[in-house]
Length: 396
Image (cartoon, rainbow, N blue to C red):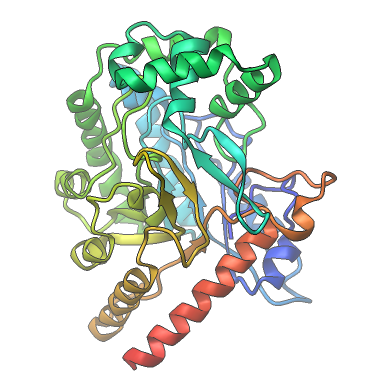
């Protein structure tokens, strides 16, 4: 499971009791672009392993994420300095025994949602993205220049009507949800200064952002290969452009282009079924079969597309639009292939992603990172374990 560090309301004991052995974590307190010192890495490892002598062991299995500085994404002259820091961080992580590092290349924002408390039929709460709500923020709250061309006329008109009837509290809630910072961070963007971050991408289209991504991976993947780290990019979430910003890790073609840009085994994927599954044109099980040797990390979750295909919510892990059986079967087959081939790394680290808020986690006294409450992820993990168990019994 993902653990955001000492301030995470979900404790390491919670994660241990869920039956996990590996912890997914990061040094969120360090500035983006700074080197990760060995001392800081070892301190986090020691924190994770502190109770290993008396309880079932935990270890820091995956870094999520080692963030990419915005100057690298923008292709600025300073990018080489930040890339050098990134390379050294990889060396330092490898020196501490960490072999899997996740990152993303989404400009400005990380994952985006418009509702963090969407009520499901069973009363649990899920994350949701509504295209019209996002248009309300973009057109009527942010008032981004040129935003009109990004929305269908009917959506834009409906957004204006919706905004006209919204209370100040509803406007504030939508604004705060949209401007959330990176997972694990207590900081969010300020509306007053947000537009300037977008302005810095005015001359960067999808082709330019792709070129900057490929430049980055050609510098860092050989270092990851040298030190034995699987470097794995997380897909865009959601996998389509927002706020005039390009998204270039959304489709099978995007992933294939990135892997070809630096064709070494270390240059790989975080296979997130939730992010990729929002697009109906992504064949997830087929992508596992085609990209299997380059998958280093797996996020299993599913989303459900709504009447407007750009609207979706986080579904139960075995429901939604992802054929989870087909995906898990393909992943198990890839692990079995690795075993037969005698590869060093055979097991794919997996975490259940974005669980629903449910049961005691609905208490107003509990505050967790959106999508990362304990009980919903525990339910998802239990379901996924059962599915994997059944698939393995069928195949073996």
